[in-house]
Image (cartoon, rainbow, N blue to C red; front, side, top):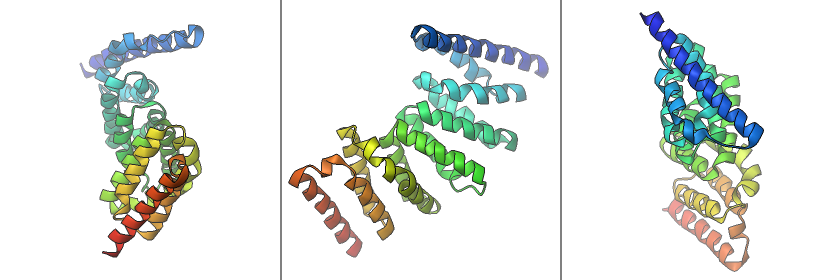
Length: 244
């Protein structure tokens, strides 16, 4: 019976996946995006993703590829990926590779949740895993810089073991890209500046230096006296807090 059930689930998975492949082909061929009309196909993939070993392996390939197309269902899709990642060693690397694909196409809310998993994985002993996680975090930064920086700072504040790794990542990957990622949008600059200001209070000298480098890359602080004054106020506030 279990075999019959998994066979039916596999059929449903393939049917849903094939429908989405056709939709993708239509975009490539005619530039017509009909994904919004196919949420039932993606839902069928979610419903059958964990029906058995073969379904799990297949869903690890399909889910990351199409999650960004269905924002309302993406959270449920990420939950399944996380479950499979935690379930056994066999699925672990495939799920981690899936996280990287998700990071390139997900909404800010899904990225925020994903950073929670990546934060843990950045501390892995496995160099290959850490390399993929690093690439995933870079993809998340390029997809939604405010959601990514906000989530990184949040985890830095609550997880002592993560702080040094996150800081090294910011120094290595965010600072060289800050100009490009932040200066395209004044809103993004203001959001990230606000996030960094909040984090300044408990910052070490090294953290403070890196946060300031990100702030210095923002055009809102380069335009005239007002920007300079704002930066000075951030420095003064932080020095006051640190000396208390």
